[in-house]
Structures are given as structure tokens and as C-alpha cells.
Amino acid sequence: MNDDAMAPDTWARLSTLRALVADGRAELAVSRLRRLLHDEPNLGEGHALLASTLLSLHQPEEALRAADAAVQSAPDAAEGHHLRARILLQLGQAGPALAAAEAAVAREPLVPTYQRALMRAGFAANNLDAAQAGAVACARLAPERPDGALGEAEVARRRGRLGRADGLITQLEASHPGHSGVRRLRLAIDADLVTAPKQGFFARIAARFRRSS
Image 1 (tube, helix red, strand yellow):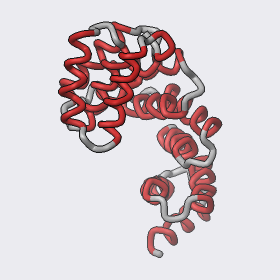
Image 2: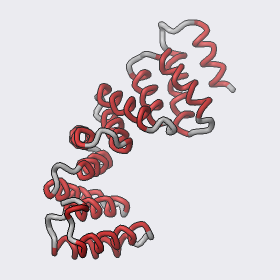
Image 3: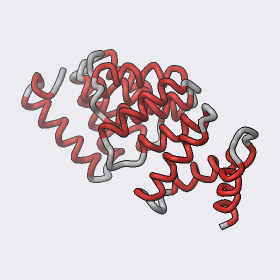
Image 4: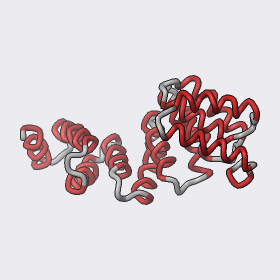
């Protein structure tokens, strides 16, 4: 069921619960969501909201059960699959998380948040093709954010393409100075540049200079 097909009373109750969550009253929202879902067990949006709220309350096992119910109730809706990916990543289940992220992206490929989850799940599962696909999509869909280019730089680093990784991170240092993720990846790339046997002399000197400055 989607918002357009929802009965007015159900839509109003769900909107009220979303407002409770936004207002920081997550525990009360969980209690009322459970009552709503008792009345309407096939309400996919309700299960999805319960999953995200439980995740915010640091209850990933309960959140996963709610996300599973969201997918069962509305298998064609991307959000339930995305929530499963986020929760499974938190639980350390990289392979299932990647499958869930791919399912979300297959349904709604133009949502940057879903592509970001694909990128992260790809890294966690050591599937650099998936991580690269998510990173490229993030960079295209949300160019104002550094996530996509950071992901591309990390893929290049892990594949040993240190020249490309160095170029991407240099661009990010100019566009997002002070960003913690950029700083961390710069340090990792510089460490690789220093130790990589095939890197040129000047690249190694530049990396050493940055590490000492």
C-alpha cells in the first residue's frame, strides 16, 4: 500500500506518527506504530517507519524484523529494501546487505541515499564493482556532496590505481576542505603512495611531505 492508496484515517495516523518521530518522541511513536500495525498488518509504510525508528533507538534486531515485514507487505517499494541494507550493515551481514541495497536501487535508481547504501554495502562485502557503481551514481545524483567522489577514490585506492585516487582526493581537498572523510582517505592514499613499489619518485616525495606537514 502506498500513500495514494491509503485510507484517509490511516494516512492521518501515519502522518501523526512521523511527526512524533521528527519531534524526538521515538519511543512513543514505536508504541503507537505497533498498535497501528496490529490494526493494519499489511501497511508497508508503517512497517518501514517502525524499522527506521527502532534503528534510531539502537535496536537493530527489532528493526530488522520490521524491515522484513515492510518488504513482505510491499515488495515493490524500495524503502523496505534500503532499510534492510542499512540494518544488515550495522549487524555485520555484508552479503545480505549488498543484496538488499541492490534490490532498493533496482526499484528506485535515482535516489542518492539508496546509491550511497549500495556503495557502502559494496565496500563491506568487498565487491568493488558494486561500490564503484554506487559511488558513480552518488556523484552524478548529488554532486554537491563528497560521498560519490570519496567512494570512487577509495575504489581506485583498493584497486591499486593510486594516481587516480590521488587526483580525486586532491580535487576533494579543494572542494571540501576540512572534511573528515577526505582527510582520512588522504592519509590512507599517502601511506600507500609511500610504500607502493611502482610509484614514481616525485609521488613518493610529495606523499612524505604531506604526511610531515
